[in-house]
Image 1: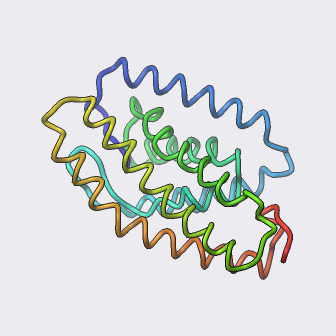
Image 2 (image 1 turned 180 degrees about the horizontal axis):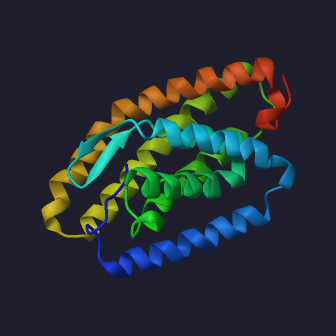
Image 3 (image 1 turned 135 degrees about the vertical axis):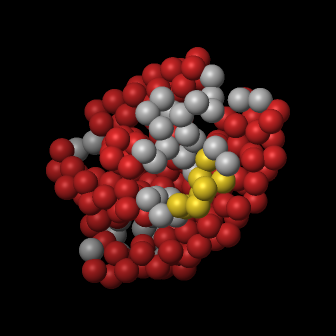
Length: 201
């Protein structure tokens, strides 16, 4: 799900970086400092999960967990993802430095959307919460894949086949993430429901 350096035009990378910094700053402004330890733990989980990846041309596919981050962190999911991407790019050359903004947008915005889906009337019953958890995990990956595909298409027609491959290859990953999100949310509701900022039903 990471786009490497040198694939996209410089103008696209610059605009995307500016947008990512603006969203991260706005998100941090609305994040309670008491939430920082929770953000740190989820950032570490995202960092580790997306290090295990399969190369697909100029991009890669892997477990993302951005839907789970959205469900657990809400608005703080975006800066959490951006921080993890910075460390991945610097420490492991995973993704790229010039495409940090691009990768943050393709994974961070779907996380925010998934958080809204999960937290909408989140005090409802277990079954409904499970459905929302699955949708959050599934849609976050598919929206991220769609974002990567659109960026690749903006780089030229030579990336058309790669863009299609990104969409197809991430369907099974999205299903796995949806199921994983259901189990993790269910576990958290039993042992630490306050992590999700919702009440037990």
